[in-house]
Length: 194
Image (cartoon, rainbow, N blue to C red):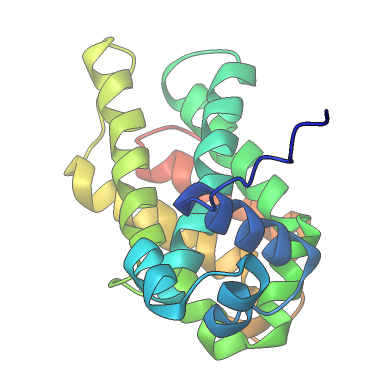
């Protein structure tokens, strides 16, 4: 006698994974289509993910946070050199990340809102994570920044955004040399010499 196949129940994690896979392929995420694809009700999906903006913010964060950890693990040194190295690693990766470039060009206004708005979950968390990096280096005695750490962290992120998203913000394609200039600006803000 054969055992009937087990019906697996769809979970919030399944919804997130499916949406993340869609985003990475460059597909636009529609919650109605996602609910249909998962064979769940739209109300259930909304209860799980909130709304499209919140879901996309979580997808972006799920990509950024591991990149941050990877950058910290793979960057040698301490103090200013270490912070600039982590900064360069993250932003060089973002600059060349094809799914991000596609997201930016599909709907530039929406993408910039999700990535750079001061109300954006991603922007807020990115500044918080960068602030933690700065505080870690201060606590270790490797850094003595000449300005408030919160402000410094915010400025660092805004400089990175102006380079990585320069095609939308400044009207020209992002360039590696501009990213190096951003790293120099960060070094100066940290109190380092050029």
